[in-house]
Amino acid sequence: MPFIPHTPDDVEQMLAAIGAKKIDDLFDEIPKELRIESLAGIPEALNEMQIGRLMAQRAAADGTPLNFIGAGAYEHHIPSAVWAITTRGEFYSAYTPYQAEASQGTLQLIYEYQTMISSLTGMEVSNASMYDGGSAVAEASLMAIRAHRKSRSQRVLVPTTLHPNYRKVAVATASGQGVRFEEVPCPKGVLSVADLAKYQGEDIAALVIQQPNFFGVLEDVDALTDWAHANNILVIASVNPTSLGILKPPGQWGTKGADIACGDCQPLGVPLSSGGPYAGFLTTRMEFVRQMPGRIVGRTVDTNGKQGFALTLQAREQHIRRGKATSNICTNQGLLVTAATIYLSLLGPEGLARVANECHRATQELVAALTRVKGVKLAFDRARFHEAVLLLDRPVGPVLAELAGRGIVGGYDLSNDYPELGNALLVCATETRTAAEIKTYADALAETLKAAVRAA
Amino acid sequence: MSNIPADLKYTKSHEWVRTLANGTVEIGITDHAQGALGDLVFVEVPEAGKSLKAGDAFAVVESVKAASDVYAPIAGAVIEGNSALGSQPELINSEPYGGGWIARMKPSAAPAGLLSAAEYQAHLAAEG
Image 1 (cartoon, one colour):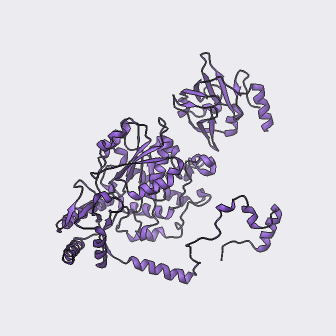
Image 2 (tube, helix red, strand yellow):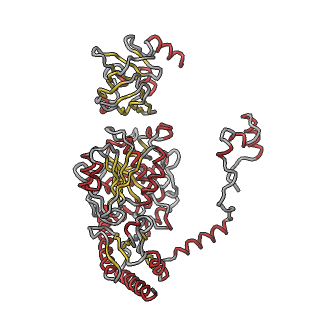
Image 3 (cartoon, one colour):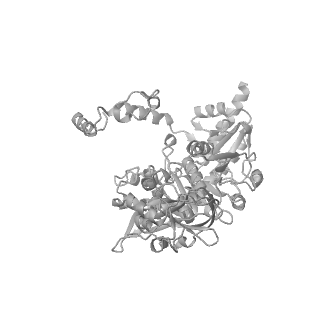
């Protein structure tokens, strides 16, 4: 049953009033060849009971494996209070409501979120959120091109140490608007100033630096930021918010700091839930605030001097600037933002630093345990956060399948995205992995590799 | 009734052009335009050196109720943007033809198609 309140009589009357015979006539200006009469691959509608059963089956298929995969989405402990509060009726909406100022509580929550994210990234201003870490890189790239007053270049450098999905999302989202993403190969697992040498002196709008990078390795963000600024290139930082509990915030990179910092809020209280929904964040300097995409909540006082919250700088937005709006992105991910805000409030800077330190410690233990297994080597032996690339002595796919049979999700197979690395596996341990679980994984991997040798 | 100085040239999109003694020009938005926009809160002025075609959007004026592009009335290169507008965008409201100028340009060709004060007056009357 479609949720359309109009009766056939209502429809007749409205059509008569505007002089149309039938509803289809209203779509006449859309050429026939652009219309889709049916959607191939979309199954018939299910009823509530059927859809409930299907989703329960899908959820059960996820199981509760022992998880050592990160690659952009991370298993963290989520205090019960996070979702108990987030799912209260007062917060239970994805968007900022219409007549946003009538919902002061929602606006205050977004304001607190912006304050925490600005503080975490060391930047001056945050928007009310993005869709996810990938869309945030795309929007940050478009924003950098608008904001770069001394360049009309549409070129954005993306090192291969940036998450492959972020690169794909950025290309899909922004290349239609003329942005040219140029991949910078990083054979050593980090982006170095030497890798960038051939771009010296060229007209380029922005460089994206991921910290920690997709391989878990720490980039030399200070040198890279200073190189970019010396070459008149803006710096977009793509950062893991958990890592900012202990790492230098993008606002302090190099001499001048990054120009835009973005990332994914998923590590902040959002469950993995088979890949989404997550939320993204985006922060910048005040200097560029009018080029920001998305909504921004500001704190003000009313005529009686009482504190109030209001959407601000709306002249950037589509309802005012129409086709020249900075973006049509909205507060679609409001519920995840609520969870992230409550998560950060509960942990505080000290709690977040403890989580980050524990992730790092567990990963060091994991790397030590797994590299003791015969047939396993460490790639990119550098300072890392909570992920590492391992090289196996045989293709990764079958090994992961064998581990999955033992209830272990052994990591992310890099061979599709980085065939040049060989049999490379990206592993991760967060604060949720115990020493016993790490040993379980190492033992299972050793048995798997040994068994396969016998079989061969 | 808005103020339309007789010694300036105008565009239908409500910019004014003043030819300076050295052949360069000063550009701003008209008294009518500032009145229609209301209190200005932000002006994005162009960078020196930017080269423009006539009709290019080269500045943005943002008021409490709207944001609009400002279009180059002539082709040429920007010599300077009015940096005073960074901290005092309201100069456009108080002195649209004076301290509220937006940019100075060096024309690359003789200005064409600009309106006289009387023609601009007639254009405003026709626009209603």
